Structure formats: structure tokens, C-alpha cells
Length: 542
Image 1 (cartoon, rainbow, N blue to C red):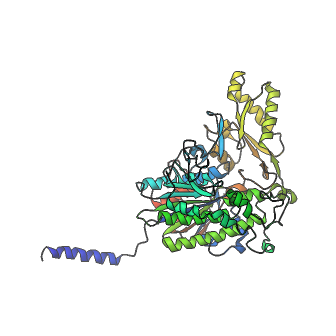
Image 2: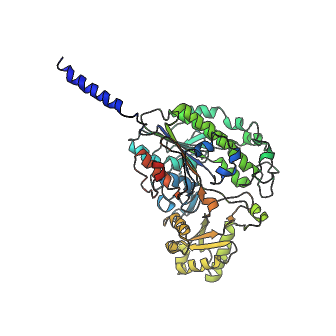
């Protein structure tokens, strides 16, 4: 008895101590869900607010709303955007300078995730010849895997391969993306050798045809779309097979022939979030002893904006439907993971400009140039000046790459060529700035803009001359619209936090896309990605 008594006293004292303490909140969330909405401008949260329900965007806005979040680099496009969210870094460091760029070694344009060393898992096409190997740094998802000795599950999903792969990082369990040819969700042999049963089960349902069966009409009566221009404006581009860009869009036949056509409609986002449920269930995410991470990108908003422009009925309808789908998905998380057991952040990879036709109709500056035209006039100028053909090797992502082999062969001065080309291109109407990227750090620009060009310049991968259009001018889109500029319509994005450990507040202080990964690292008590330059959002921590 005397041997048991001290142990009994110790047990009683420990029980008394535990009862005197407050019940602790879970130290870490069971699941982190990152949602990047492709081409979601910040003002969209408010422009259509009267038509949003309570369960989607408005529910997320009841969390921590970073109202003044910007992108700190150029170009403001998909590949760099997704990468910066998850690395907390910028193209100068992580190396993803565009969706594609010119590789001087191979003398070819390379895709940001293209990799012929791997093949498609789940279909016979080329979609799976991809990997994250061009990404030079770790991601927050990599760091979570490292911090838990690879026990945490990390999966990225998106209709676009780059929207799934770059957020998932190097060490993910898998990244899944949509193969438009087969209509399947597929992966790359970089990650897995065969599709799990639950993916095959989802694919077997032939969901694209089911989503498209009812065609695409407006969610509400079309008369209610008062925030948009009338249907069928001349600057809108019809969908493939259509004569006019008007509702209803008869997409059923098009999707039956080409499942990839679904991604250009709001139902591509619906399918993505439905697939996200299958990921959670199939992988039992959020059910283990370690925090899991699901990275989702909703790509269809980008396709719709490019096709019809941001002021179209189609763009508004796509956002109203996304709001509904987000609400259902958040309710699903409440039911399966448990309210307060997961944390969600929602942001965007970039915004979008108004269509040129819309701008001109309302007496705002606008214009368009084609990259091929710039190459032709630049080459002609240099030939006249120096008497040599082919001094420009390639043009991509608004950057000219000089042909240094030809420059050396003809014993020309590269510095003089860059200077003369800058001076000449500045004479073109609609050109705001032409930058010799070798001198980017000394630009005479306001500090925020200068930093965006510095952050976007990677010495090994970027070109030699950067063209910068004036506000409202763009490259290649005489109809629809596009993005990539330094201006607020492309760089001001939403950032919403909701769930575990998140208080309710609107924060109007300056935050950047790069702060997301730093904040997650602080919340999860793990190392920030190795190229991270962002800072934790202090208000969210309190």
C-alpha cells in the first residue's frame, strides 16, 4: 500500500492541476486549405456583394480581411502568382519569371512546369510531362512536409497544371490537374506511378458532360446583372462554335466533343471544388495526427475573363456561381473536418484590365500591341542602325532577348544596342517605359514600381529589354482582356483568412502576396520557405 500511495497522490495532484487550467484550443489546425482564384480582382468582393450569399465570400470576409494586398513584382500572371503565394518569394529568387520564358541554353521557349522526363498518369496525352523542377526554392507546403518528417499530406489541384504543381511544391504527395482531351483528372509520374482508386472513381463518372448537360445560362434573371455591360458587347469573344457571345451558351455539344471546353465556363470551378471533396475523402485529409494541406486553384475565372472581359455578364455570373460553390465547400469542411479545426486563406494570382473596347467607349486610354509586331519593328530598326539581321533572338512575356552570338560575330557593342533599342521603342504610342534590364536596379521610377521590376528580374532567365505599356494598354487582346501589368487593376488582390485561430477584422495596412507563406509559417510554427522575403501579418497573430 505504501508503494501505491505516492503514485496516487501524484495522479490526484495532476488531475487537480489540469482541472484548474482553461481548455486549450488545438495547437495546430487539422487541415490548411489554400484557395487561389485565378484572375480575381480585389474589387470583385464588393462589386457584386448584393448578389452574393452569406456562405461564400461573405463568410470568408467575416474572418481576417487584408484589404490592401498587392503583388510586389511583374509580370502579374498565373505561374509567378501561384509560386509567390506559396514561396513567399519573388521571380528574382524563385525563378518562375512567367508562364513561359526563353531558355538561352536550349534556345527554346520553356513552360514553367514543363518537363519531358515525366509522363502522364491517368491518360495517354502529354498533359503529365510536367514537374516543379524549374522552381528554385521551397514552398510552404514543402516546409510543412519537412517539419513533420513527411507525415503531413500535401496535395495540389487545379484545372491548370501550373496552378496545381507550383503550390504543391517539390515534395507533395500528389498534384492533380485536368486533362481536357480525355476529360480526366490526371497527374505526373514525378509524383505517383498510378492514380488512386478514388481518382479513377471520380473520372469514371464523366463529370464534364454532366456539368454541361444543362448548358450555361445565367444563374439569376439576366435583367438583374446591373453591374455588367449588356450581353453581346463587340469586345467580347464568342465561345468556340458560337456566332455571338450571348446567353444561353449552348456548351453541351462542345464539351461532349472536347471536355476541356468546360474549363472556360463556371462549371470548371464547380468541378474543381467537387474534386477537392473527393481528395479530402479519398486521402482522409485532416483525419490524422499531423496538419495536412490542400492547395486549390480555381482556374475558370481566368478563362472567362480573357474570353469576355471583366465587365461582362459572363464574368459576373461566373463569380456568383463561384460564391455559391465556395459556400457549399466551406459547409462541407465544417461537416467533415469541423468548424474551427481548419484554416482557409483565399487570394488571387493576379487581377485583370478592362477590355479595350470598354475603355474606349468610356473615353479612357486604351490600346493593344502584338508581340510579333514589336519584334518586326525592333529588328528593322536594328538592321537599319547596325546593318545586321537577327539581332533579336526571341520575344516572350514582354521581354526582348538579344542574339549575343550574332552581336559577338559582328563585333558589335551590346550596351549600345540596348541603349538604342530603348530610345527607339520609347517613341511608340502607348509605351510608358522601356527598361534595359541590366540596369533595372537604377530605374528612375517611383519606389513601388521600381521594386516590382527588380523583384521580377531573374538574371539567368529574364530577357534584356522589358517593354511597359501605359495604363489601359495591353498586348495581344483586341477583344476580351488580359493582365500582366504593374497597375492596380492587375496587382491589387483579395486576401481573406478564415477558421482556426483567425479573428474577425478588416486590415487596411499594406500587405503583399509574399506575406501569405510567412504568415502560415508563423501560425504553424514551422520554418518559412527558404527564399521567403515576406513578413507575417502581425494583426492576424494577435
